Length: 245
Image (cartoon, rainbow, N blue to C red; front, side, top):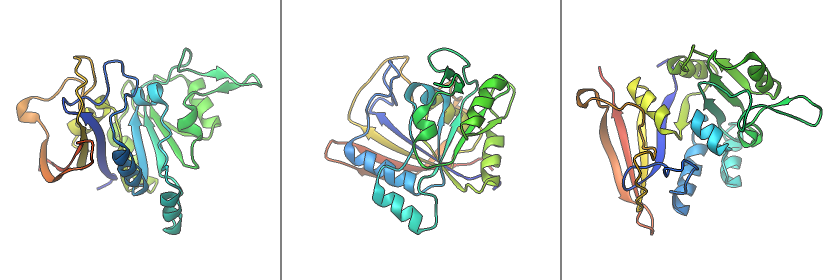
């Protein structure tokens, strides 16, 4: 493959929601699941999220455990996996857009995403993003690439990451990005933590959002394992994704 291994991990409620209708990053994972995700992050070359997650949550995407970071260093790996963001258009102004720093220069948003680390940071967007916005992120040390006219060319993204030496990518959301990855046949494994909660709401995001799949086009999954995971009643399910020949 001229792309990395792509591993999708999500936490969802029993009714399949990965966030509430408010879309503010509602807590779903248990303490035990958060530890598992930290171990998962520590095992890969890069962690990736989509644009809505970037702008609404500004995730740091780093390995929390000092012990796990030290183990990565002992293996000769970077202390944290690379951080990758995919966003169709980075806003130039507004709540999520560029701001002025104390010296009067342009300061990009996404403070935690950019500065938590140390870690390499990659940002993939489209030609819809204004040149001054791209310049501001490059000045901040981010590897910014415009790939695509109105939507990010995901195949090109993963080819680029592979060329940069990244061999495994953990995708942590959101639902629209994950649906696109399944549509393109880019997902290799899917891990789901199912929490004993019900969020409901027609507008609450699910694991695979956007327009959905026709039954004959639905991605197939092969069960690897399922287990009762914690004392809270959470369940962990691990699938391999069946690729069309």
